[in-house]
Amino acid sequence: MFDFLTHFLKEKDKSKSKSISKSKSKKENKLIYVNKDIILLKQSNIIIYYNIKLKYPSIVIELFNNKPQNSGIKRSTMGEPFQPNPEIPLIYQHTIEDYINYGKYGGSYGHNAAAFIHKDAEINYKYTYLFTNISPQEVVFNAGLWLLFEGVSEKIIKSYGNGIIINGNIKGKDKVFNGSKMNIPSYMYKIIIYEKNNKNYYICFVAKNKAYYLDEDIKKYKNQNYDLSKYNMDLNKFQNKFGLKLLSKSLNLEKSNEDYILADKNRITQIQNATLYGSIIYAKNENELNKVAPNFDKLPIFHKIYYNYKKEYFSKNKKEEIIEKLLNKSMSNPIF
Image 1 (cartoon, rainbow, N blue to C red):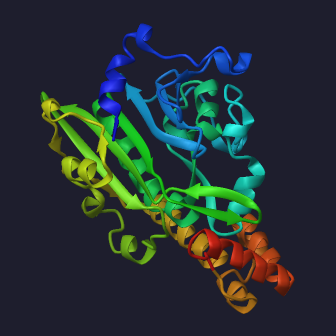
Image 2: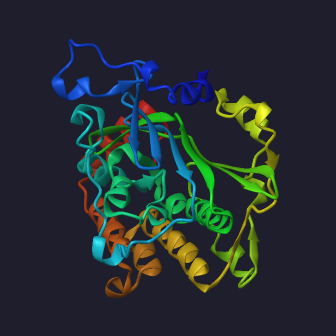
């Protein structure tokens, strides 16, 4: 069991941090190792416990003392600056090619700390796009349910002006995607802690890293609060289930009932777009693909990428396809 709480409290005393041995390269000498697999990284109000073995973060913590500010950063102009973290040797990180290969099977770049609540400075915004904050995440989950969890966290932090968000990944199975070997988290979680009326509350969102199709359900709640309580797990039950020690009982945290999000027009459109990702990438044949996406030119830009992934898959030589499926079967359950 990794005792996060004990280590996090120790980090307040920098003298207790362990540095890597002198036998490593100069680049690695600057890194702080929690244990043989976990590196501690810090940037502004983001603290990352990065797993060099799994090549994604075990835990990402966001600390807020004030409401999130936007210095004028726009995603439309900033783009999607995904890239390796220059602080970490490349052998400890996945590559853009790995994530492209994973994307062809329904994967995506999954933010732990959400980019849109770190727009106070360009350096902080871009830091969320480094692979040390990214997990291999199923695309429908990433663009749908996980986005709702992020929306609740933003709502809470903006409402109360302070709080802590703890994001994490539960180790899953190794898989092979077009030659890229990746461990895919089995579950992802987002814990939001905040103070209200002199009491401390928490929301512990946890869900399997798989597709959740919510579009038909959320439409029923147009301009109403969409209830997410079934994904809000009791904190002690959560920690026991996954063998984690993230937060102490002595903190006297109460489970929050603010685990909902307003199902406005934009939110419903986002969830419909999430479903469209799944309809495209999991299409069983070209006829089905053409049925769910009959007009390529009208697809949103990122959906076009997944459409092209699927077209490429359908054009593959049958022999290549069989070999690829056997590879995945040898690692775990095949994806298609």
